[in-house]
Image 1 (tube, rainbow, N blue to C red):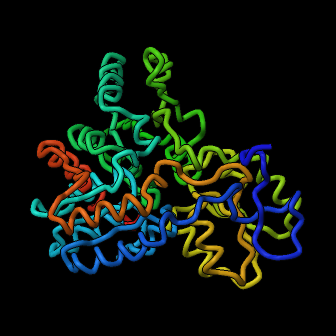
Image 2 (cartoon, one colour):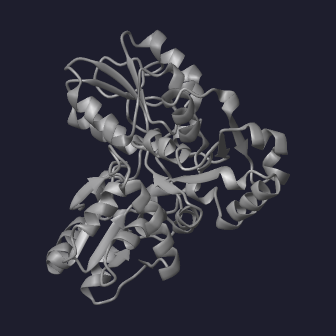
Length: 390
């Protein structure tokens, strides 16, 4: 038996290891590197003082998150960075598209550092600019491009955000996707929305928040000619969903929800809207990472929860709320592999390099892309409601 075959072990005592779930990952991560790295990270941060501002995404491992000046989701962190103009260096413990957003929103004199350039996002990588431009050309050939408003999820590259800026579109977060779609449908007569890059967030928002049907949505597959769709299907659709997904949230299954309800009396299922539509339909509550955190904070003592989001956050919530029964929604899905590339050795290397006067792994968005991406971001910021939360 390998660690992949092992069940997810729960927290607490009196456990049935063959049946119960918790928030521990099979095999566990190794210990936090060399213990001396903790002291080195502290020393480097102290030496840099106010010159450095460290951002930690909720999905980061504990050994990294302990050094974050602020924690949060991608857009919140980018705005937090913009609110600290005195910081010369922004060290973003997250993934590449997040660091790009921070570079777009911070001043030109500020430098954004990503401790490991390999920390990407599989969802963002599923929508490449050339693919999206080819899709737009196909929409024009089908005679529908003039009606299409592109909306991209925050979890996308800077050039996709810029594409939306150029074509009259906007950015959205998981908190304000409904408001963004309402805005988009109000931009043109008989408007359609091209939603990038996460099909699940787009579908869940259109159907469950806006009252559309699944038949109103089609999926554009960039690996198939014409996206795998006929011109008639494109003309009839109200929402064209890009075939992308989160590698973590997309793997939760309806069967797991059913199993949990049978084995944990009174469990409440709380999931992120990046989950599959069938999972979201079976959940009790659906919302962004900030929504998940606030829901658990407000939950009564003794309540039971199974949470469908990245495991580092679920583990942290369980540790912070020992009076509540908190479990991970699945046995086999663990950490976001790309987010976890930001580890303590990389963070120490980045900080100590800054102390030595060397900026490593700087993330820079070219000026033209930055201007166009800002247009799409500003359209989101101008929306009513919860536009600033991820």
